[in-house]
Image (cartoon, rainbow, N blue to C red; front, top):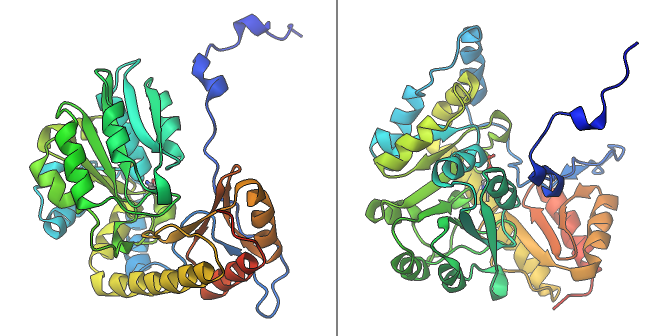
Length: 368
Ligand SMILES: *Cc1c(COP(=O)(O)O)cnc(C)c1O
């Protein structure tokens, strides 16, 4: 038997790994016994409670006949369908295995070591992780009142080293969408050499009439990258597919940085089929938006201060009682997403699940 290798010969990995947080997936639904009305629910990952849109499972299964082949690397059918739907040139599109992967592609093509990436905080937890993995420095700008982006402070945070600004609209986890005028003023202040990402993962759920229209903004700003996903409204989170819309040079760079053949044949087929089901999609989104309105009104009526909720989720600031609230939801058979000692994010899911969280909220004193 040879000696185990000395510690000094362990594979050398990057120093940053020791301080890099791991992405925390939402807890799965608990293991409560399923009895009459006592099932368990998962409201911790902003997933869609509906099954795939009509025809999507069949189209996805048919794609499996080609399982021995690599996927179409250009995703031609999907790109053509998206270009038609969004009224953008096909060469302004870049796909990836979820819009999180497309974001990693943005950072890979924009950042050299030591460059800076500016984003709001708290926002999407993948931002600091992907930024640091790309070798860049994360500059987190605190949210303003009401869980809103402070775009003026974000513009002020842009320096000569800034390569990318990430704008999450609506903001995960707090909920408000960025407004058209504030975004226009922000883009006027940010140098056009800086890439501005508008992360619109929840765009289908937005009902705020003042919200910015990222696609309209991209048409006048060659430095703007719009990120969209099939994971949320379309309910295809398990298949991993998202995309960017950007001016041709940026989109081409993003395609270069994509993992070869990353977007699977099943993901491509499901996305194409889903795009053909606009009416059914609209109905589901509307049902979730109605449910959001109902839940947020109920929780506000209890005295809680819920920020404007424009995604398929809502936010409750709970400070030091955050973990206690999450545990109470767990006892009621619902997993929600706690963030440290800040608050919880609750997905709009099945009616019964939403109701249980509303009931838990009723027993908590409002935190202001
Ligand atoms: C869910 C989410 C995404 C996209 O996730 P994918 O499943 O990788 O497409 C992107 N941005 C935000 C803010 C999200 O919440």
